[in-house]
Image (tube, rainbow, N blue to C red; front, top):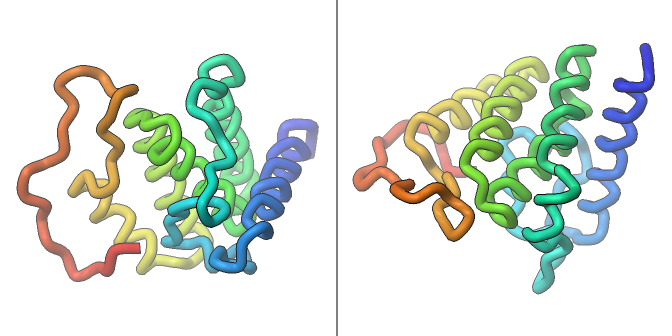
Length: 155
């Protein structure tokens, strides 16, 4: 298949290894459909926001997820999309990457047959749920005042 797919599969394996440090995270890849990472390890954060401006990790995570989806490996992409969403929203507070991660997570859920989680992700994206607003955001960014109600549970 090529070096691009090999690197994406390696990134997916590394992301599963990160989750292995805490009991609270899912073990199976399919269980990452609709899963939202609050923290990688209880009481500590593994990543510092300033490191991502030079390393371009968010771009790399996005590229790895896209490659996995292009090769039909949505199941392997699910843990990586959860990590991408966590770093984009919880660490870097980057709205653009968070929306990209959310879109890729919805696609991965749909392709992995997790339609309920895909629809809930779509509803959350539409409402702007969990969208990061903070110091690294462009000025004028804000959350919607009244979120719309849907029949999906919050992940």
